[in-house]
Length: 79
Image (tube, rainbow, N blue to C red):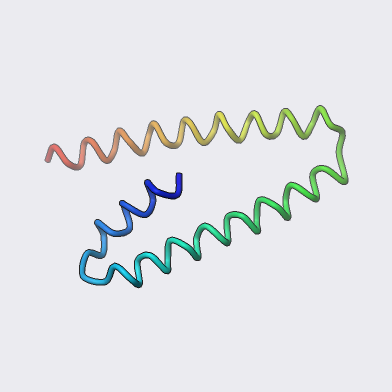
């Protein structure tokens, strides 16, 4: 997912690629920290089955979000 977001960020700010790349790295680090923290809370407070169900739900929700976003990007480029 990170290379795709980097392309989107660079397209949005072509005049400042260094700043756009820094924003991308910052977003990645925040996502990793948030995921690690929430994952640790989930693992320590629930059962293994709940952890796997939550992970599956997150993967499915991410796939739906990516499909919807791709549809909007395609529509925006056609106009």
